[in-house]
Image 1 (cartoon, rainbow, N blue to C red):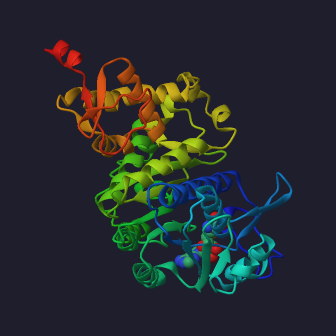
Image 2: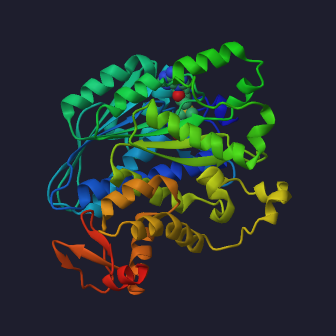
Length: 429
Ligand SMILES: C[S@@+](CC[C@H](N)C(=O)[O-])C[C@H]1O[C@@H](n2cnc3c(N)ncnc32)[C@H](O)[C@@H]1O
C-alpha cells in the first residue's frame, strides 16, 4: 500500500507498508527530538523542564517494513521514545514534564494507536491519558498522552490554548497527506507561541499542476489556504525542471513560510523518492530560535544523501532513493564526488568569510549565525571548525568578556566577538 493511502484498522490487523522516504523522515524525527531535549533540558545551567509535543496527523502508530520483514514504528511512538532517549542522555537531577497530544480524523487510526501499536511498543501504560512516571537514574520524567479525534484545523485553537496554559517549549509535527489540511493562518497562530517549532510535510509536487493552468479552482484554493498569491510566479511547466526553477521553488517556499507563516527561521529537507527527478515534498522546519535551527541542521546533515557540491543550491539537504543517480545520468557531469565537508567549508568561506572581513570592528557570533545559517548546509560544528581555521591562520581573534580567548580550540559562545587581527587589518590598508 502506498503511503498516500495509508490506513490502519482499529485492531492493527491491517497496517500500511513503510517506504524509504518515510523511514528517512522518521529517522530525522528521532535524531532531532533526542537532540532537542538534550539541548534544551540537558544542557545549560538550568534547562527547560516543560514540553508539549503535538502530532497533528498521527496515524495508527505502526507500519510494516517489507525489506526487513518486521514492523516499523510510526511518528507518535517515535516521539515518545526519542524524548525518553534525550532525557536519559541528559542525566539531570530535576524532573522533566512532557505532554503528547495525538490528533487524527479517523477513529480507527487512533484506536489502532492506543489498542495495538502503543502496547506493542511497550507503551501500554500511557494510553489511559493519566500522567505516568518514567523512572530514569536521576530526576524523573513525567509523561502524559492525550488522544483527540477530529480535523487538525478545527482543533488548533484548543491545542494552542492548552500549550499557553502549560507554558514551556512546544513542537508540532504536521504530517498530512496533502496541502489542504494545514492553513497558513494555523501556522501563524502556532508561531505566535514563540517558544515553538514546526516540522511540516509540505507537498510541493502538486504546484506543477497549477502552473499549466488546468486546475484553476485548485489554484484558488491553494492561494487561499496558503496565502500564496504573490509566490511561485512560474511562466511555464518546463521551468520547474531547470536548475534555476528548482532553486526558485525552494526559495519561494522558504520565503512564503517566513513571511506569511511568521517563522523567524525556515529550513528544508527535500524528499526525492524513487523514479522522481524532482522533490515530492519538503520537510520544512519552522522555528523562532537560532538554537532550534542549529539542531535541525545537524539532524538533516546526518540523514542527507545529496552531494552538496551541486545539489545544495537546488534542494538544500535531502534524501533520494537509491536509483536516483542511475536514472539521471545527465546530472553526473557535475563533480559529485567532492567531499561534502570540504564543500561545506568552502561555502562558509564565501558566506562567513566575507562578512567577517567586511566587519572591521568585529561581529558577534550570534549575529553571524543569524545572518547566514539558512543559506548554507553547515552545522554549528562546521562553523566552529571554520572559525578556528581562520584563527589558526591568524586572520581573526576571538574576544570574550573584553579579553582575547587563549584556548587552543575555541568552543564558540553566542556573545563571542570575532575580530580581524590587527596584523590583517593593517595589511588591508
Ligand atoms: C501520513 S499519515 C500520518 C503518518 C504519521 N505521521 C507517521 O509518520 O507515522 C496522515 C494521517 O493524518 C490523518 N488525517 C488526514 N487528514 C486529517 C485532518 N484534516 N486532521 C487530522 N488528521 C488527518 C489520516 O487519517 C492519517 O492517519
